[in-house]
Length: 327
Ligand SMILES: Nc1ncnc2c1ncn2[C@@H]1O[C@H](COP(=O)(O)OP(=O)(O)OP(=O)(O)O)[C@@H](O)[C@H]1O
Image 1: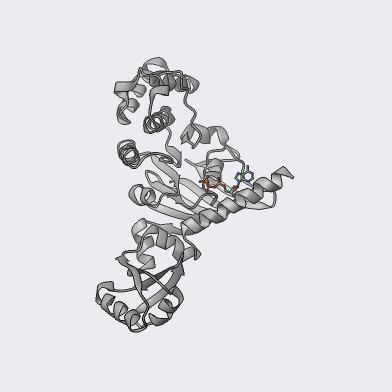
Image 2: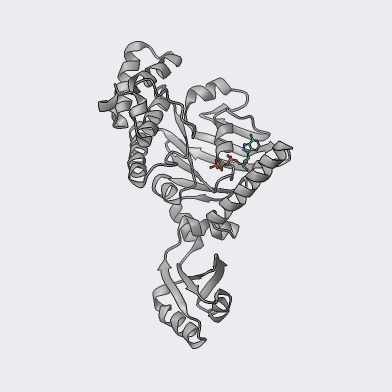
């Protein structure tokens, strides 16, 4: 049985469509990523799957339960760690866990056992009696994850789990998330706009843009679909550069942010030719680099824009939305 089944799921806010008929399935034990720029509809999607928002259309089941008609059963099956911090700062780590366990009516000896086990899993056993207000951002996030797992959910939702954390803390948190998945076999669905996070953690990735899934597969297959190598060129004249390099061995040329992106096979064989062609036309090269496609290239390939450009669009949509709410 798939852990999550989503069919034509839609959410509109007035005239604005935040999630636009998305469909996907997540297998039990999978780490599944929703990757996309700010405002793409990731949080709205997992809010519907975790029964915090009612869909405007389509259907979804989590652990076999319908998110509209079987909300209680869905809530028992899931753990959620959303962006807003929800720990009690004036309580210790243990007390925060204990309070949550009581809410779920987990009997006392079992509660203690699980709290010890989970605090161990996220590396906080030594700090269990310290007040949360003394914790760093990464420790708080780890505690929230441990707390979200206390009632043994089958599915864990993580909304931007490493947002605002420094690179070293993010790395640690990734290890904890991988451990939880490996040791507890729990299905994890996470949202992120960090490409490296999706790449490192997720078995499969759905790239989401303006409420739609534009691509869905393993990271390796998504990159393979873009194919070959990429040569990234910065020159004094990007338009002429693209014209001069329209050679038979070039599969595609794109221009973005004043840079020219050349898709080709076996880049190393063609570098000297690229340099010669541009030199002959008197076009100075400011920088040249060769790399394999990244998830950013996958996004660019399917949407025609970089994730950064899309974040600017999303920011603008948000401003329009706020303006229209003020009137
Ligand atoms: N309650 C609401 N009312 C109106 N519009 C909303 C509401 N919630 C979200 N939106 C809009 O829906 C779109 C998708 O938002 P959502 O929060 O799902 O995006 P996201 O991909 O999770 O981005 P972020 O990482 O910034 O949270 C945005 O344009 C947002 O402004």
